[in-house]
Image 1 (cartoon, rainbow, N blue to C red):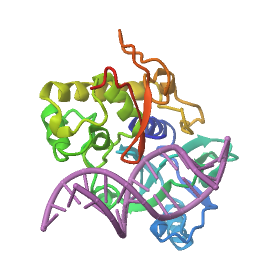
Image 2 (cartoon, helix red, strand yellow):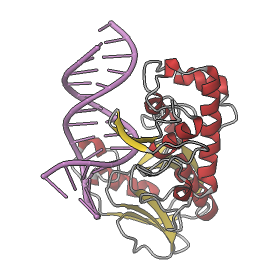
Image 3 (cartoon, rainbow, N blue to C red):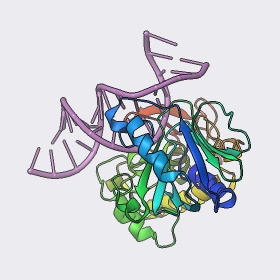
Image 4 (cartoon, chains in turn yellow, brown, cyan):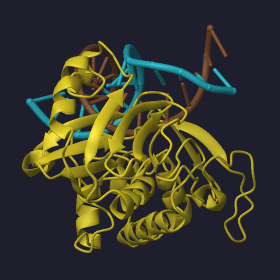
Amino acid sequence: MPELPEVETTTNGLRKEVLGLKITDVWTDLNTKDKRKNDTVANPTFFKIFKKEVIGVKIISAERRAKNILINLSNGKTILVHMKMTGYLFYGSNSNIKYAHVIFNLSNKKFLVFSDARKFGKITLLDTKRAFDSKHLKHLGPEPLTKGFTLAEFIKRLKLKPHSKIKTVLMDQAIIAGIGNIYSDEILWASDIHPERKVGQIKEKEFLKIYKNMQKILTKGIHFGGDSMSDYLNLYGLPGKFQLHHNVYQRKGEKCRKKNCKGIIERKIINGRSVHFCSVHQI
DNA sequence: GGCTTTGTTTTATA
DNA sequence: GTATAAAACAAAGC
């Protein structure tokens, strides 16, 4: 699923390929009466406004915030894309992509396609100036890979939820932005911390371990072009390679890869999410 | 038919 | 009254 490294990979691709191009047309087959999607292109009324705003406008920059992609336009508007579970952006000369639900025609005759098998993803339009203050981004915690995000800050954020399980807190977007199920499993496995440990019961040394592994593993995810265990593909429609380097995620019943550990990877539902871990060395 | 996934929102529990 | 957990929900493939 698209988490920070996948969204970062796609955003980097956009920076390389579409800056300076104009949007010449936009199409969608999404059409829902779900009120929660009233401010997305899946709402026909919103789509009319969206279309009017983006056609003829130049793409000037692209950035990532948590798991969101922001495509900034020359008219002061920003297209916000959240890929949720099965979404991805594709760029190329062919728009005939499986599960294509939104297609942008670009001034170089190429296409930017939003593919999304489950249609959980959302695309909306914001004022660039107010994007970070919008309801979509306002609540988000700090970015884990920025230089200013120190160990002290990390501990302070986690300790906002002292009675919650570490697994749940790592994935809480309001505490730290961008970490989802795959990377939180991998981070805790590498840190020898049981996913059900309460934040308040974790020692300073252990926080340091989690902090270091968080930076290391997210960076590794980006290095391998993201994780394509599920549906994620990069801007060119190619899979990432991080799934080849999982130590725990989706390895239920297999041998623990920790040095000298004889454990078997277990899978358990914790706070409604499936969690993979080794109960021998993760304590 | 049940399970799976994210993130938001609502409802329940301690 | 507060904090946390659980449940419901959108959707569709397997």
